[in-house]
Image (cartoon, rainbow, N blue to C red):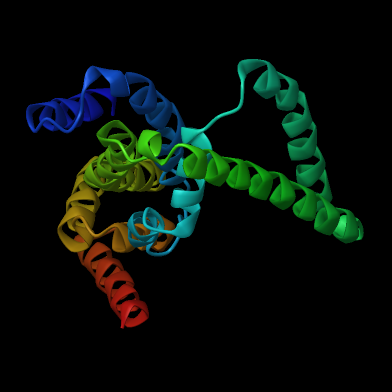
Length: 238
């Protein structure tokens, strides 16, 4: 992924969109949102329409909200003082969300965290009103746009990684279920030709295909299992 992102950055540099002053923003994006995307697609079930939701979320108000907060950060001393507070709040929210009897506490904590976010947002708006020329610069615009472009450009790689991971898990299960090497190779080829590169279909094959072949002893039975799973996948898609 680092090599792929390096290529994206190089192309943006050729297009004069990316420059060296965006190194920090790019590194933060790589170890933050980009890494989170990579780990999400390794989940066995995954989120339905994950990639569509990812791209649409880039243009939500939340992204603008976070951008405004990051453009005008607090002083280093203030941020260091707030770090333990945020860590404590995060831990409390995690504990409150784990049990139903803490529902009221969770509501209070949600109000507190929302209030803090609105305070940061108000501070950013105040700084913009105080010095609008500083905000309306090309550098500020690029800090906002470049992470969005990088995320959209990363989606094909993440999709390929998700398909590869799903196939790897399915083929490992097939290898464990089928002792016959020839039948395993045929079942593997049949899965690749049937599911192809459609992630949702590959994941459905991964969930049902190995179990359906436990008692299979012929290529005909492998074909029947593949056709049945493909039919169910099409039915759910429709």
